[in-house]
Image (cartoon, rainbow, N blue to C red; front, side, top):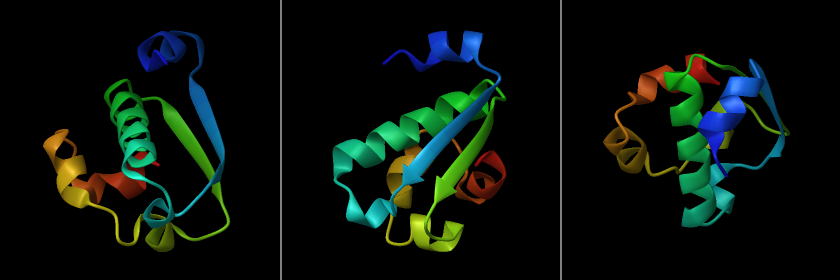
Length: 80
């Protein structure tokens, strides 16, 4: 999926039913990282709808992968 192209058409994104990242596989985690990275870079507003709080959403997540993408971990709460 070309997130950059979608960013040109939509100023606000809504992701619904986002599961805790520890419950999904590495491919799904990587897709989430890619989306967050692109939206953060393009300064697109992101609304997440989850059945858990942010701490639970990212608990057990491999932050090293996210940091390799160049976005500081502490920025995630502001980005999402």
